[in-house]
Image (cartoon, rainbow over all chains, first blue to last red; front, side, top):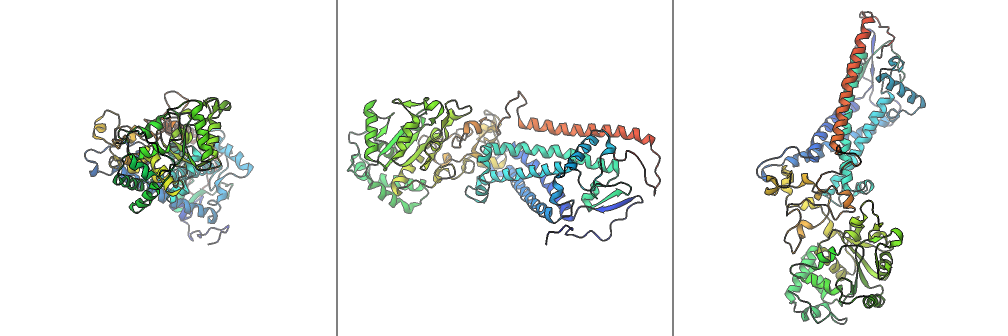
Length: 244
Length: 382
């Protein structure tokens, strides 16, 4: 598949019928949508099992030979991490073959005027002249930054996670590939610390992410939630979009 | 048992001849060689080679320097309840200079050291315990009026091999912990022109020191090392992966406080700050005090003393994770994280409430929109 400006997957032939006054725009191809939900599920599993590994909150009674609780937690954690890395690979590939809402240019507000827009979006969320903020089909600059930070945090988790994973097999692939992490950060305890504290970013991100998505749907009838399910956004026909 | 003898190992005697004079049987000597081969991970077929190399060995010259340290490493290596042939070998090879063990003092021993270094130029083994303070021109550790830096540089110049024994010689240990007032560093930071082998630990296991010396005497070179310069035969795997309490870790059975039921049952010390998962050392296998026990076996979490800068990176010793320094009681990562997450959620709820109020106010002024018409509203994005 060659990288083109056009999306790799063609826009579905017949978009779902829009109500009068609305039109439907195809935004997210299936790999992006699949990545979103699979990665979300993995992160949920990783947070739950990760907090157990960091500070075991259940104990098992009786003989050690009858239980394998921490063993299972670690198995699930490592498995979910592997799947998350797989979704990351797909996401990185799609940064180069996706449509312009999905490509790498959409990761970051590059142009100076994007930064002005970001201030407007911030003001809108602070209830200051909400009408002045432009509309976006894809991600607004604030979204771009917060999602890119999420990618960076997830990437840090992957790197620090693999650095710790490598300890069990010194000289193995992970130990040698991620051997630079601990000296860089100042020891394996610091790696643990970073891995642990970064987890909280997901828990801070999650309520804000869900709230703002639902808010856009309920308040502006912008069909943000459904766009990550079937790829289409219903938008009002009378609204101009700055990134159309 | 082997006692101090009036018969020193003389230059023209091989080790085999000398051990015979000391009353060590052939069988005991071969046992020692086999165990050393096993420790070095060479397998039983290598034992004859070790024996051959060791018995034909002429007295090697070893200079043992003690710098900024507590002498605990010397105690660990030499003071065991029952001296073994390994101790004897170390006793023998450390003959030329070891200022704690030497009978002489002052100018006499310094001269003896200079003579030994001159006579064995390029052929002696330099063992160093203790760190080198660099601050204020190294005045924090001087022996005979010379700084530790001068002494170790001079010693390393003609050495065939440099072995740094203990955490001080490895990275500086406790005196190099923040804020490191004396500017203490490990030997590898001073001697940069030749490889420095680190036998890490505070103190290190005597068996590892012995086995390293045996390796050098057998093969004429130091054993393979990891990224920290520690011999792989000893520091090749984690305490966590060799631990006798590992089954309890996998099962989810942990000591929460030191006098609880779990502690009595010998459960895993992970929750009371064991650093075994981040520490590479053969402690669970070799154990301490003639294989009597080891810290985790005795119910104390590993403090990670074979890892660089463990005083800074492995503390607090009784907690899983480092503290966030600088502010009062809310110094735990999870407290801060949970506060931020709850704050974010509360912020979201508050924001939703304000949005709801605003929307309600706005809706009063809006016309009812019929299906098919387009709502024309000034503030349509709220």
